[in-house]
Length: 480
Image 1 (cartoon, rainbow, N blue to C red):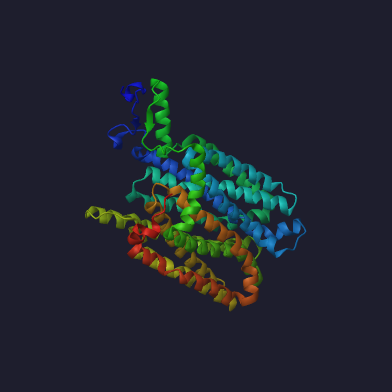
Image 2: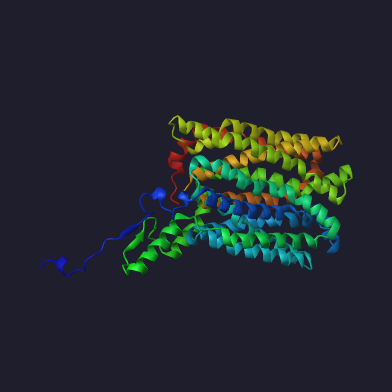
C-alpha cells in the first residue's frame, strides 16, 4: 500500500508580495509620492532635532541646578548632561529590534509619549537622583527616532536619493545639540532651569500630535505580514505567507533582533571600527558641550546667557558641512549611475567628503584648545569649534549612509549598534573632561583629544578603497 495515500494533502504556501508591477503598488513605500515621503522624513527629523536639543540644553543651567540641589559635585556637573546620552546607548538595544518586529510607527508613537512624560518629570525633580533618573529615561525613549530614523529613510528612498534625506535628518541629530545650550542659556537666565523642561515638553507634545497624524508604517516585512494576515482573514485560506517571513517564532526572532546590533558591533570589523570612530568623535563633541560654559566663564568671563551663545560657532560649522554634503553626496552617485557604473556602499566614502572631514575635526580641536590656553581673543577658539562641527557632520553622515547602504536589510540594527557605542562615548568621555583639563591644561588636554581623532582619520579612506573586499571576506561573513 502506498503510504502517501494516507497522508493529508499538503497545500503549498501562497507567497504575498507587492502587487505587480511592484514599482506602481501604492502600498509599497518606495512608490509613495514625494510629498508623503518627505512628510514622514521631516516629522522624524523634527523629533530628532528636539531630542538632540534636550541632550545638551541643560549645560548652561548646571551651576543653577547645583545651587538649587545644594551640591558641589564635579561629577554631577558633567553627568547631569551626559547621562541623557547614556540613555542613547541603552535605548537602541531594545528599540531597534522592536521596530523590526512590530514596525517603525508604533515605536515612534509610544516613545514620543514617554519622552514628553519623562521631561515633565525632570521639570518637577526634587533632588539629584530624580533628575538623573528621568534624564536617563528621557534619553532612552528619545533615541527612537535617531536609531530608527535611518531605517525609515532606507524603507522609502532609493539608494541614489538617500544622501540628501540622511543629510536633512542629520540636521536634527547634529544641529540640535548646538542649538540646545543657546536656548538653555536664555531660558534659564529668564525663567529658571525648570522652565527648560516645561517649554520643551510643550514643543514635543505638539510635534507628537502631528506625528500621530503624519507617520505611516514603512518597514516592508511588517507591511507584508499585515497584508498576508488580511488575505488569510478575507479568504479563509491559511496558506498566505509573506515573502519576507523569517519562519522563526516571535520569541526567537525578538532574541535574535536584540542580539543582532551587538553581534554586528563585535563581530563585523567594518561596523566595529566605524562605530568606534564615531563614538570617539561624538564623545569629544559632548565633552565640549559639557565644558564650554565652564571654559568660557572661567577664561573669558561670559555670563550664563552668553555662555550659551558659544555653541553658535559649532552650529554654523555644522550647517556649512551639511551644505557641502548636499552638493557633493548624491551628486557624485547620480553622476556614476548616469555612466552606467554600479553604485556601491563605498561610494558614500568619497574623498571629497572624508578627507576634509577627517582633517578639519582635529585641526579645530587644536585651534580651540591652544586659543583658550593662550587666552587669545574668544573668536579664535570659536573658529576652532566651527571647524570641529564642520568635520564632525561630514564624517558622521558619510559613515551613517555607508553603514545603511552596506547593511540595507538590517539598517536599523546597524545604526542601533552605532548609537550604542556612540552613546557610551558621549556619556562617559565628558566625565573625564574637567580632570583632563586640570591635569594637562586646555592646550595639551585638547591636543590629546585631537591626536586620538587624527589616528582614526585614515579609516574611511582605507574602506573607500578596500571596503568591498573587506565586506566579502570570511571575517565579515557573520550570520545576523
